[in-house]
Image (cartoon, rainbow, N blue to C red; front, side, top):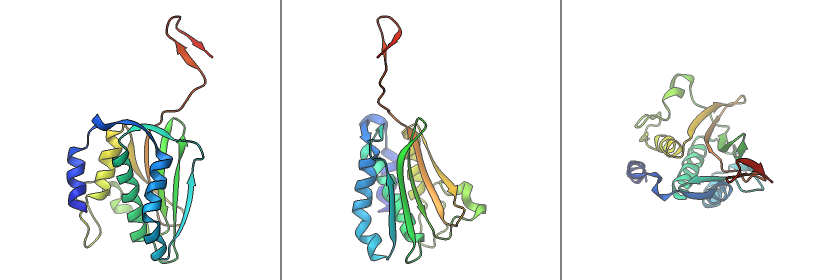
Length: 178
């Protein structure tokens, strides 16, 4: 519930960080909400990397972000609407994005959607998206809202990725080694 989210946001810290595969995080979030997505008559499209998208992070907090974004998309999508989920690398960043074809976010409030206690929903608390932003920042990243040309909203999380490399630094000589 939202109170638990607020308390979780207050105690979130980097002590629980380790290597986390965001493709697994996204797949767990999608799997958990798929029955509700289907019950609502929504279509789910996923574009999740076939290879691990690894970050240094707190897995339960990152799962919380995915669930929050998916829940918002479910709430704002019309029956028969589509929710699109993306997970992959963009440059050196690991990115999770959830897009819907609902009404979108009015221009006048876009700069405030991640503010704590800001909401446009009659029964909203303004905690969910603020929690996502706090978690993204805790991971050295940022949460964002992009315009969608066809309407709807696209919420993102970008955090530094840990890519495997075929070259390593040889510390004894200071040169690159294969």
